[in-house]
Image 1 (cartoon, one colour):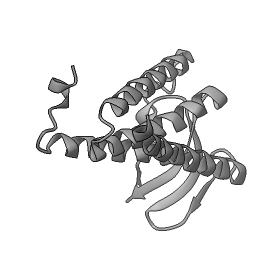
Image 2 (cartoon, rainbow, N blue to C red):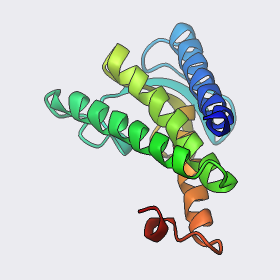
Image 3 (spheres, one colour):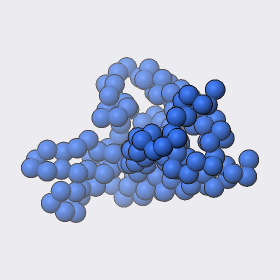
Image 4 (cartoon, rainbow, N blue to C red):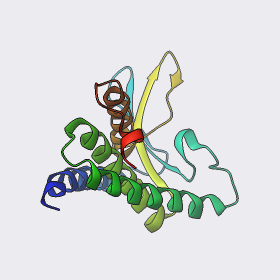
Length: 161
C-alpha cells in the first residue's frame, strides 16, 4: 500500500489543479464569454454534457449516467493496475494522470451535470474543441501509456493474469 501513496498523491494534485482552474474560470467568466490571450489561444467558459469532442452532448440526458459509470469503472480498473504494477514508474505515471483527469471530470458530471471546459486553441479560424486540465492529463497519460508499451518488458497484458 505504501508504494501507492505517491501515485495517489499525484492523482490528487491533478484533481485539485483541475477543480481549482474550473472554479476560477466559472467564477470569472459568464457562460460563453471568451477572452483572447494570443493569436492562437483564448479562455472561454463552456459546458460539455457529452464525452470527448462533445460526443453525445445533444442526447436527452441519459449520457450523464453512462459517462459517470464509465469513469467510475475506469477509476477502479486503474486502481487495480496501480496496485499490481506500483514499481513500474512510467506505466504508473501514465495511469496516475488518467486517474486524476477522469476523477476531475467525473466530479463535474456528478456535481454539475456537465464538464467545465475553458482552454480554446485556434488557427486560421479553426477552433479545436475547448478542453480543460483533466482532459490534458488524460491525453498526456494516454501518450505515456503508448510510449510505455514500446519499452522492453512491457508485456503486462500477458503477464498480469
